[in-house]
Image (cartoon, rainbow, N blue to C red):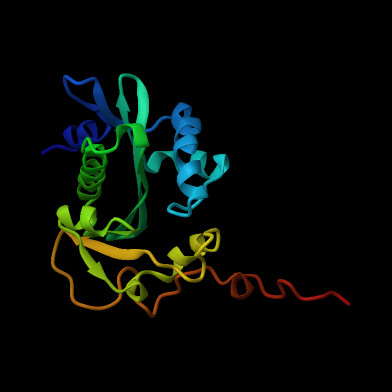
Amino acid sequence: MTEITTVTQSITPESDTDNVVIRPALASDVRAIKDLVDPFARDAVMLPKTLSELYESVRDFMVIEVAGEIAGMGALHVMWEDLAEIRTLAVHPDYQGKGYGKRVTERLMEEAQRLELGRVFALTYQEKFFKSLGFRVVDKKLLPKKIWGDCIHCKKFPMCDEIAVVYDFRPYPEGPIGPPPELPQVIDLKRLVPGLGEKKG
């Protein structure tokens, strides 16, 4: 398969005869995405997102459009050379039970394969849903430390009751998921900028 064909597949909307289209999100979709996120965030089943955060991450998103209306979305956020997170996955209550969440997730997983990632993970309350797609449950402690930077915005932090699930596209040994433990997973600004934060006399 040529590179051109691969890229074309990743950006071509998938549609069917039911006026359903799955496509990469556009900047013009961001306000509709936020309108979907906000009720779930209020119920503490999804992290809140500002408009600024959504615009900055719009390239991560796939949306499902039904008769021209955004009915659901999900994002694939690359964390490391062989790892990405499926996040902000939701379907509007009026469109739930029609398999749209599964279709968006499968499209995100196809994108992960196109990027030649080895595995994807998610933090979720929908264990059964992800297991039906071939994910397995893992200990949250195995996930990259830097994902917890997002969690401070959650109402349930630090008492997280979400389940961690992982899908492996190729075999991996047991152990930590993501960057090797010996590599820094956050930027140490004080090391990079000597004297940062020190009071000047």
